Image (cartoon, rainbow, N blue to C red; front, side, top):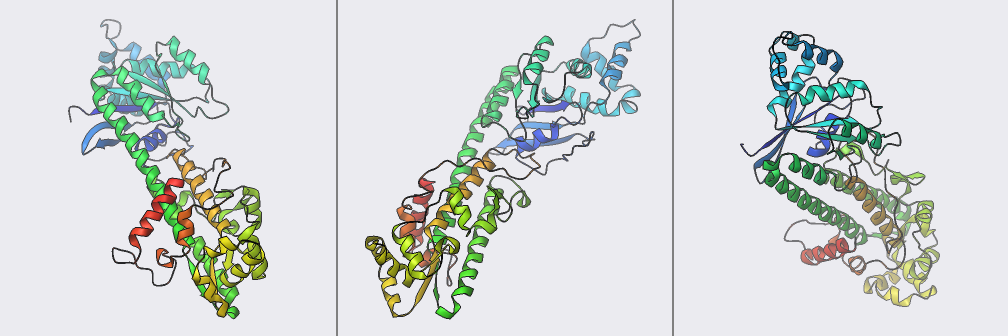
Length: 457
């Protein structure tokens, strides 16, 4: 463990020290986060490892609550006869009765910092620069360990980033990192560890290895997230039901519910992939413009607001031929689709559905998920993934979706892999008789189609 870098996370009470640990460890369950001051009362630790080798140990400490009085006490140590340097004063303090009584919380902080290689001094950038913070820094500097200030909540409108930078510079602390624990910057961890490498040269190899591993993990999470969304889209595109005319309404609603449930499963998988708890987001409650996800999946207003087009060619013909509003339904009936496609002048598109639709002239009806709903699923699952990429593990509010840029998922033709899936019901886990594993028909073709869709995403 000699090469393991030990960091004490220190600072005033309620500035986001535990939040920083949650974000760096990607563990939303680490410690306790609250708006109440003094939430952390004991030292807690976490370890970051790469290939089984511990590279970094992080220690969450209680907040400094009475730095002014402690600094006065430290100044009195020695009674004026013995001139103690900073570490010697800290050692004398830790051996005193005051460290076990009046300044018990402060003693935990300086004891951990003294036993660590360096400290991360977390600052709530929204707070005004008060004398107590200068006293805290003077006490912590007495431990004789490097300190790296971390400006938290810099994304808040009330953040005083420039003022804090100037104040820290006056105290000789010119190196600092802005790291918002609720919405961390994409390169926030890298910049934090690079700054530490400048302060502690011996730790550079381990920190560089940690940075490289973090980037690999990020790329792997994105690839895995796109694969989850692609599987959702393949499942829905290949889903189909043979429907008797008198059971149409019941089957339509049943399939809608099944698609909603499948989307919720994808939400849960994305949350787990990015290290968030199941309750952080639900498909039925995530904000989507002015509506809600579950209710809006088959809502024409949602499609209209997102710019997802269903007019023209097969879609328009299908709506007319089926005798139902396709925008409101979000599902397509096979027989009517073919007839409507002919009327709509989309014969070439209709031929793409193959002989399985031609057989429906005998009276059978085939229910499937419309292209517009596939586009909507792709849009909002991709938006959710991007929101999770930007979300800190200390965030307490609901997931906020980023603005979605117009692209091929809003309009135009679907990826060819999703079109192929229409003709392969054996690819969909939503269809009766689905079998997962090596033995099911079309396994390799389904995997190839998923890879193509993931590349489009």
